[in-house]
Every structure is written in structure tokens, then in C-alpha cells.
Length: 156
Image 1 (tube, rainbow, N blue to C red):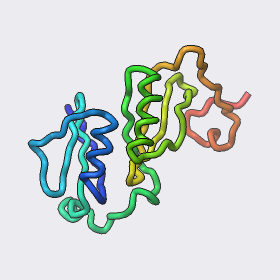
Image 2: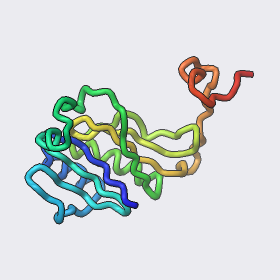
Image 3: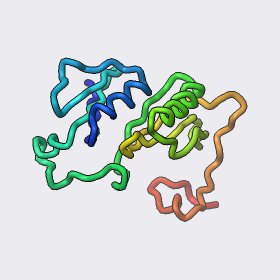
């Protein structure tokens, strides 16, 4: 199985430049069309669709702007080292994206950064380990925003 994760974009060429610059992935030239660009990753393809693709996919009534849309999904790119997360977060800003949060330690022991690409799509960079000397924070499970989640540990 191979994951294909696609984004609708106002400017597929600019988005291609951003993601290629960030991840150094080769273009999937075999699938290039006037309204599609793709980048090949290990086990995945990141697709970039121009606005006409909404209609082709039967989604014309759901077209919108990522910049102001609620975030309902995002891709996470797992990287080998915490330093890679730091480096790519800085690079994303230089390429026209922005760092939304981080890099930061998660309560489950990962080093992460949350980014927005130049069109506002959210993505996350993650390493499954923390930088040396950094500890995972402890969540306050009595926080009302967490207490309503299924599987939240009972309060003590």
C-alpha cells in the first residue's frame, strides 16, 4: 500500500517549489498534468491539485481557502533526528511558510513543529525522540479541555 495525500492549491507551481525545497523530494513527472503536480516520498506521494480538480472530483461545492478553513487533517512527516525538525522548521519559514508552533517536546516523547505552507495548509514535522537534555512535559489531565476526551485518565 502507498499513501497519496493531496492538497488543493491556488498555485501548484509555487506549492511544488515550497515542498520540493523543504523535503528535497523528486517530482512524480509521470503524473504531471496542467492541474496536478506530485512529489515522491518513501512510501507516499504528496499531490498538489489546482482549483479545477474540485469539479473533476465532484467537490465543486466544497472549494475554499485553506488559509481560513478549519483544520480537519494534516500530514505528519517523521524525520530521523530532532535537529532535522529544527532545520526544516527554519527552512519552511525561509521558503514562505510559517512555524505555527515549536519545535517543542510532546507529552508522548516526540520533538515536533507545526507548520503552515504558503497557502495555509497545516503540516507537522516530528521525530520520535527528544533532543538530548529535553524531557517530555506532563499533561494536566484535570484540564477541562482534556477531561472531555474519551480515554482520559480519571482524576485523582
